[in-house]
Length: 91
Image 1 (cartoon, rainbow, N blue to C red):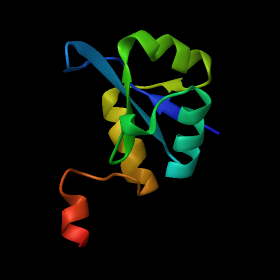
Image 2: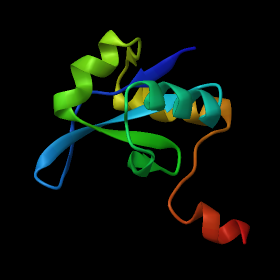
Image 3: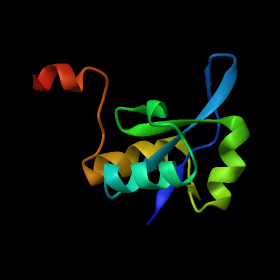
Image 4: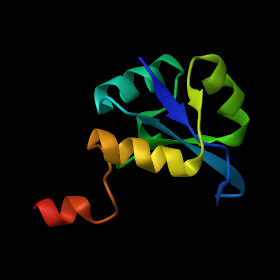
């Protein structure tokens, strides 16, 4: 199981956030997040939002640190990238 996390560089709700992704499947990503106690509500389209104070915990648990650009590349390569509005277009 390999999951990836980018640096906490995304502002929101008074804190900085990282994105946690898988390059294999959403099931793999959900399993990893569940093991860390990350709530399912933190899942957004194709990634989990991870607050900066949890970043080190996620890396210690095995997430590979990559750039934000690499996160997007990995999602595209795996066919797992979901942009805003994708679900509406599928209906």
